[in-house]
Image (cartoon, rainbow, N blue to C red; front, side, top):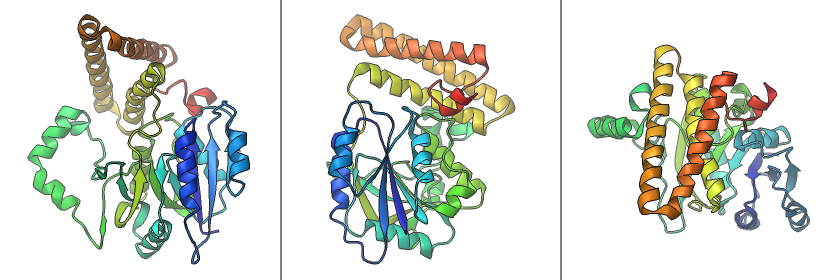
Length: 323
């Protein structure tokens, strides 16, 4: 088996159907591939229906909604391929993409992690010239200032070479990696339940001497917000987890005074923003205040747990549950 396509799903059945159907159009003659779908315990009765409709796909029911990193690692543990393609369920693939990723990876031995261009439903390409978070550009305002004052250096850093450019990290929606490299960096970091696990994965690859790359010779359709939920409680959970994952990233990649200061600035910035926003929304747009109140409630509970249990991990993280 050449390529194992690994998709993590949680109640994204409509998008997953389109994704799996797109693979039926692929005529793979020069390579072989398998599809593995890890369902993070959707518990809505639809998994069995998909298993019967797509017998060629290896469906794995996870033990719970254990997050993206754990789902990816679970899929990889069942994979037979020499290469892994981690793919979001809200994507669709076209003829030639798998082969292009495969050949580009083989022809460029400096690459540890490879992705490709991604386009949404209105034809806009996702921005993929990403830099690792640093102490001086961890937050949006300082990041914008850095880009403004270092425009030429950034353009040079991301210049196109042989139809490839080299960002610091790529989104987890499309990640192509050899089994050898995956094992070398010990897979996805299950400290993260959701968000920033892709940045962490690329950071590990670079620390081991590999490069992260994007080929412009292949494009994958990626539906904007296709795997997100509309329920306000779920929105609040995901928005809260973004902040929690930032704390996890800080604890994993910054130490000493820099780490402590980043944690403090993030706490003060987030809480002040959410409190002010909640008050304003309550006064002028009461219907939208509910979401911010729920985020605040989640964050206060999280910070209380940080103090009482001395950990920045989310309670949803598999590694938190093991501790």
